[in-house]
Image 1 (tube, rainbow, N blue to C red):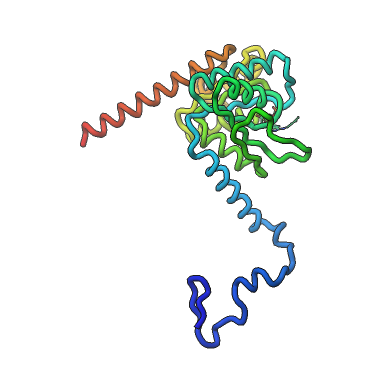
Image 2 (cartoon, rainbow, N blue to C red):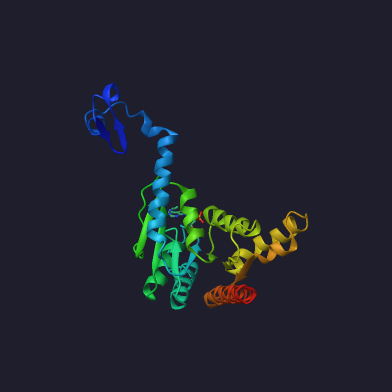
Length: 254
Ligand SMILES: CC(C)=CCNc1ncnc2c1ncn2[C@@H]1O[C@H](COP(=O)(O)O)[C@@H](O)[C@H]1O
């Protein structure tokens, strides 16, 4: 008889090698490393690592913005202030971990004593997580990384940025619009920067009936870092009250 892990073999069914021998004794062809079934395992391991890193994170806000804005500019300073205000309000700051506005928000958060998190992405050119990150992970897959931003933060703040930032903004807007996430504030910072887009959304999307009037309220726009935090705090307070009322109604009803 032979036990192979949970399996039992007897008589002629007993294999002539052990599982360890089959694993360790031969190399075999390596083509499977480049196949989708193997990639699925890698994708799975990214979810496992990401959930492991972030599942005990305190309340957090994801901050998005351009990778290209340099230190010493007014937008960079705005990013630093946003990170600092979030830290002062007790929120961890999660960014894409890269340079520019991501670095600015991480810097502000860290220097104000908050928890600063960076979720980087593997890119075709060399790049490392910015130096203001307390906890970080670099992802291979954009879609795994995006899940982490949504799952482990309670609000999105969007600073000036390009295609990457727009992608993150509209993903959030779509998730809220389709009720995939509920009660999730999305705040744009910089009326001068975002005002043109809001006008276009109103004139082209709303007026052609491509979005509903209340969809315009899914995203709020402000200038001051303090206002960003006020909106998020108010929204979270409203949610807490609503959950409390639901709980009281449930216990009264039972
Ligand atoms: C200098 C350079 C281009 C570095 C790129 N390095 C990056 N590192 C991490 N996240 C990034 C990077 N580029 C884009 N992203 C993601 O896309 C957004 C910025 O893209 P963009 O610069 O607005 O379009 C960020 O919020 C971030 O989540």
